Length: 300
Picture 1 (cartoon, rainbow, N blue to C red):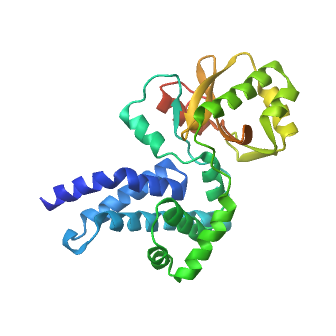
Picture 2 (picture 1 turned 45 degrees about the horizontal axis):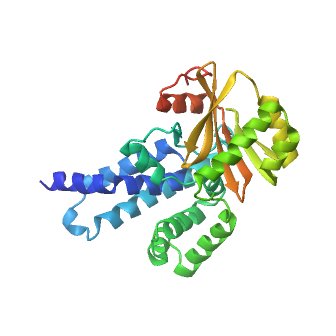
Picture 3 (picture 1 turned 30 degrees about the vertical axis):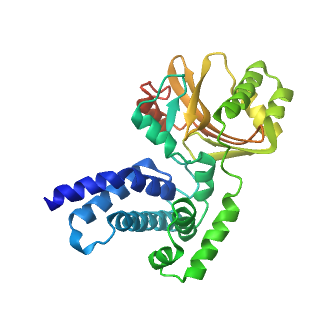
């Protein structure tokens, strides 16, 4: 009976726990692993000794995620064969924005979304900074509890969160998806027409484009550079479909009916400030499967 009750309580917390792990790790598969690890630990524990199961599970997931981040950092620093830091974009959640009503699972996913731009910045923080910011600023966990996880003082933990907060400022788009969509649509219309002036008008002067083609991230900076890149990749056979990427206006691009790439946009004050382009074959194959499409790059 206790195992059944624990399983029910765990399922009540699962979505919250995945949200914590996803913001910590930026990887859906690693987040799922962290959540599963929390369940295994709970199933082997004495529930009578746990005062607050939700808080206990959050702490476990946070600790597991922190260890994953530290291990990832160590591999990147010590092994020439390891995937270097910053060589991958965070996993996106993508829903085609075709005007149909999302099912409950899709609505729940979008409600839990955090912008790709924010996740990109979180990936650049130290593991301790990321934990302090995510738990306190995004999930309102008290600094005293976070300090215990990090084996630091509360003041030191506050400083970690403060440094992270300065880094992430301005990285979340507004909530008006319709306004975002107008800017994104104008961007692609100008690209298809080869109109550099209109393209540059849709972009912030300091816009940044991160493109993942499968061999690491290529970064383009500045409106002129990003506009020129957009014109170069515009092609009549590449069809742009409106999509919600982590809850914000984005696109899924198909080539002869197969998924070619996915792009996420951050729109602030009517201009695009950041773009993430997903075109790595493995990532596209995974996204294509989630959208019920074939990948233009073949299977991973």
